[in-house]
Amino acid sequence: LRVKTSGEMWRFLTGVSQPSKRKLVELEEKPPGPVATRRFCEKWRTGDGGVVRQWLHHEPESALMSCTVCRQHAREKNCNNSCVIGDKK
Image 1 (cartoon, rainbow, N blue to C red):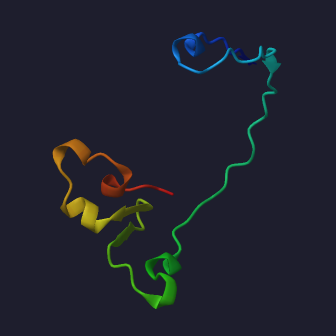
Image 2 (cartoon, one colour):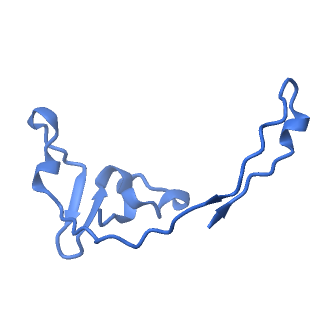
């Protein structure tokens, strides 16, 4: 990968001088690392001080975690976010 910065926007900004020239930078491509296995932890249901998070919904069969309040109040424009449909993280 090569990163090149060439911007002329400074010319249009009051009080801004031309930035110093940058050299092209070669970036190393790293090999993919091991994939971590993640699971739902029951301790997430209780917050600091032992307060139960009743809004946290977990479906063990599909490993999805979501927010019940977000699901109840979701509107058409925001019904596809991870808090509503769930997330496997």
